[in-house]
Length: 336
Image (cartoon, rainbow, N blue to C red; front, top):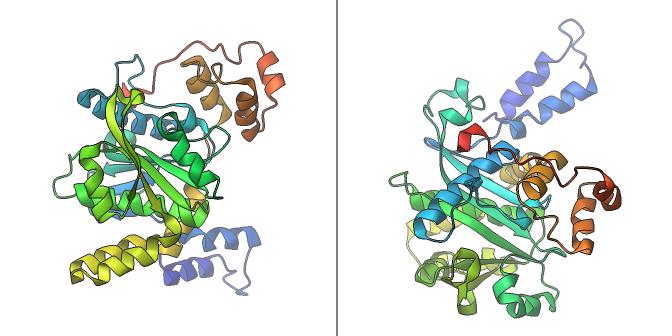
């Protein structure tokens, strides 16, 4: 990570060696952003990135698919990917945790290919919209009650930790939630974070992450009828609630809660703003229309809404020969 002094040093390198005058303003602006651009969310041999490219999204979707298939939550599909309609929204944010081959080699940071890293955990964050939230399929009355109070909702989906990182499982999950908190509350101004979990895991979220039960246990068709409960975290009260709980616990707990809510907040949020980018329209067309008829199955008004978010005129798109009819193509080799 580049600190302030290093950034200043690079600014000096952009000055004229004789007069000392600064060169192009654009270059100076670029160097001022170097600290954020080079910020890497690293945890020893692990790194967490925003999966903004379609390749990285596929790696995350493949990780979830493999985990859900093993647990009986998913049915086999030819793509071997787990994704759905809400993954097409421009502000949907997916985080991907990887194990790096040589964390001590700073020279390779940022230049590692997919083949040089191993995916170990992922989490996706979806924000409320006219498409509603995934959990509306099961808990619409509970979520509508919050909406009627003017609450702004978001949901954690596709949370997987493969536990292939001995001693790091809890830490990786904690840091994924930390990034979800900063993204949802600080960047998107959401007021409530919800998640559906298997009832046997609910106590963990309630005790350690301070979620509260919002919906009772129900079979969830999306995961082959596995039981689920809906949990809610009030983001507006999260910081004081975390610190209040920490003050009643041990020093180690106090450190953990401070780390989750406060450590490097400004730097992390700046990094998130730069790294969060929507998928390109070509990827939307291929993965959400050609490979799977997700767009075609939408109600016309919702399809118009979604395509409009990508600057597409829905009528023109639908009149374009082959827009929804590309030949399905295999997922990238890295997830084959």
